[in-house]
View 1 (spheres, rainbow, N blue to C red):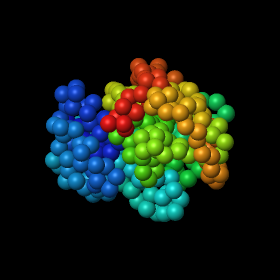
View 2 (view 1 turned 180 degrees about the vertical axis):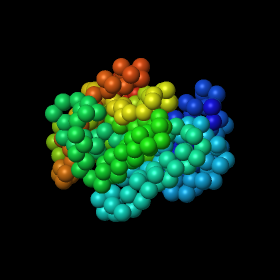
View 3 (view 1 turned 45 degrees about the vertical axis):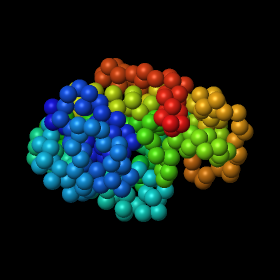
View 4 (view 1 turned 135 degrees about the vertical axis):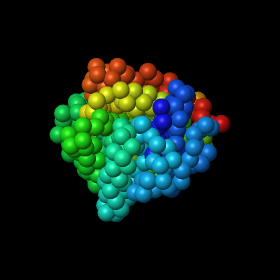
Length: 299
């Protein structure tokens, strides 16, 4: 199959590209390298350096049958400070990817967000929970999902949206809008004290990047829809740090800082629909995934 991966030089996108190559697909990556890194591009993939707001050259070169759309403005703080910039990339960019995919008759698998979509969760959030984004980033991702659904209704396409939990793993950049796992491991590697905001009891659904990549590839078999990609398990920040310290063989006390305003206290996804309809379930336990991640960070 001919596949195009937008954002394929980034954290999750590079793992998706690797998975496609492993199954024998022809892979083209579209990435502007503003956050992605050239060294993340797997051997055998073709890199087209460019912007998703002008994707025609990459589509012309790839002639894709499937598009895995992971390129995005993913920094929540940037979305709050510059909502127009966030929308320009995440909404206009997605529409242009959809239009280019329509010209080539390609299916789109779209990386969306669970944590920024659902707001506070009293229990694992199903896809039917009404969206309550707390930042323009979540709103722009919701708009992207709605455009995919509209194209499915209008053109009979089979586009799929995946709402990821808190993804962690190898090649996650510990700078910018980084996940807490990458930040913890960077500090531990460099002998610095881990920093915890608030009381550390806020919870997230941490899902390993290898499991996320498998779900993303498998979604190509679906005929549309929205699916959570998470574990269904809550882990608090202090619990996460304990496991990180264990796999890293470190014994240090964290430093606590004031809570960040507007931060979610509970975020967890219900992956039942993906389990039932996609035949996917997370394979890595938190400890196993963190051990593999630490091995990569500590090299």
